[in-house]
Length: 175
Image 1 (cartoon, rainbow, N blue to C red):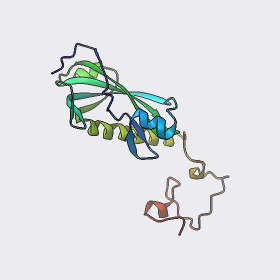
Image 2: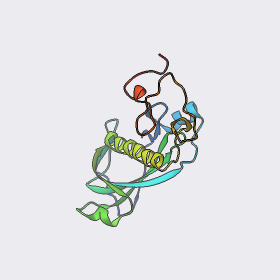
Image 3: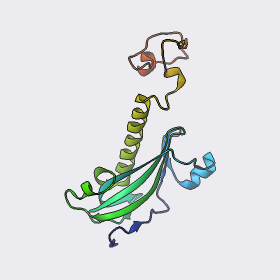
Image 4: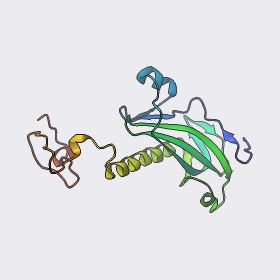
């Protein structure tokens, strides 16, 4: 058992798959990121999330914890579809309500790294949707303003958000 002193830095294991690639829909190591994609652009947005950790596991290896409040720093690059888990920090022993006094959004109890990754990917999509709602980062063909000519894909059924109902129902624009 590793005992953590208050606010001590938690070193991320080198085997931890720390980068999410939206294009490949998978988590990759930094080495894979360098080999396959040439490195990492700086993330456009940083977020801090807090979670209660009993024993965070990755590949059946125990990641030390004893009901502690942990913070995870996450960088998002919405343009490239990358998520970077930048690091973990031990905050304090967890007790009900302690997360209310710390910076970050509380995610709840997280036992397995796969659950943490699911939550982070969920936050990526949540933030992407918020950016889209504010008109940031929307693909030009999805902006249907009065003076914008709609692209002709052989059908013209659009939902309220300007997306194609046909594609959403599993159709293909390639016939």
